[in-house]
Image (cartoon, rainbow over all chains, first blue to last red; front, side, top):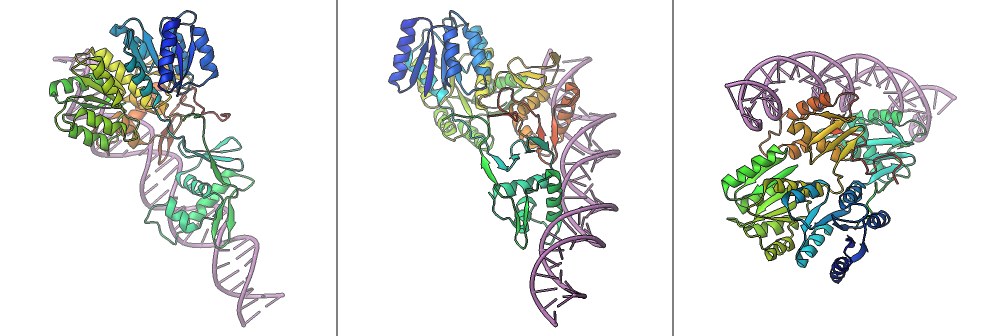
Length: 231
Length: 231
DNA sequence: ATATCTGTGACACGGTGTTGACGTGCGGGT
DNA sequence: ACCCGCACGTCAACACCGTGTCACAGATAT
């Protein structure tokens, strides 16, 4: 776990750093708000331990900065005052937790660990083939970056074809996976849907017909979506 | 935000629930550890407010159960004692925060909100999409800088949609996350709420309908990579 | 007690899925 | 060579489901 301690009182900062290192964490130290800001911009920390009262950039501003950066970094605010209003204020700035000085060291460790324990949820993969991208959670499809509007069935068919990873998918399989269980086995609706799908996706065609077997999208595969260098 | 209050003293439990509802949260109540356990197994809560001293299953056991379930649910422990050793113990059981009775209600709200923000990882304190900004802690929404007055449900729906980061959210999901347990699964109220929400937000509309799937706000989530240039 | 918020039921409308008819191209049989 | 049959593509018509909208009633807050 990667931790940054931002605290202007050098002895306290070092003591905290040493204690956290003893717990097996990788700890960096910054003595001013600006220094902290700089380091946080370079390295992706799991947790930032932030003194609210700092020379240079204020703790509040730095906190906002970090939280709005979109990273998964958690902020634990430290402050001299333990007044309730102060605590509420800190939390509403975006801090994930709050600890008043003086504090018991085991509690600090417990809280840092609680913040760092957070698992990063897996981002759902994005399915691609050639210049076509399909995002299952956003329910969007792009061709060469251009948004393509698809209906439910069209989207479902394309999703199945792409997730097949280039393999041939029979009409029966498509019926089974995209339509519900009481679909007429002799229906021609799959053919019609594939047609409109092709039309909407435009040239050059992505979907091959394998006569007697079904449909196939050459070069289909999945890649991870945005972000998350976490672990 | 979906919250479960597990507390055996009925008047206190109800008072907490009502207060949190006034803040726009969807709150369920359980009066015993077993009841809490059951409800937590059925519904995915953002935060569980847990009295440590309970009839039935103990607060400690329930806490462990929830934390190890692999869900993102956060636990806020309530206890009569405010001793530090007690706090550390609670945190090491997996609780994400700790609050001693008696407590100031604004602090409880702030902490629940902070935990809820963590339950949806990497959510910045202000959610945006196009020229719409939503501040969860202030409970305000602005369109092009102009304040928009929203009711609790409207706000909750918009909050969920924005924090979904552009993903599609089904009506069922919205019901689950914005309404509490006695919501009729067949209700049409989500549709109506979305309508009034759209009306209040004005033109151009930012909420897309994805037929057969749900609703979506393109470009939501501000700093996260929703753009086509991502990576 | 009054106003605002929330939920309900009815209805209108448009998109979507499905169907059936027909067109096209290929291959095999007589 | 010719015909026929098969598999698939294409098109337009239609029925239906999902959704938006409205007015009203009950619930809740101040």
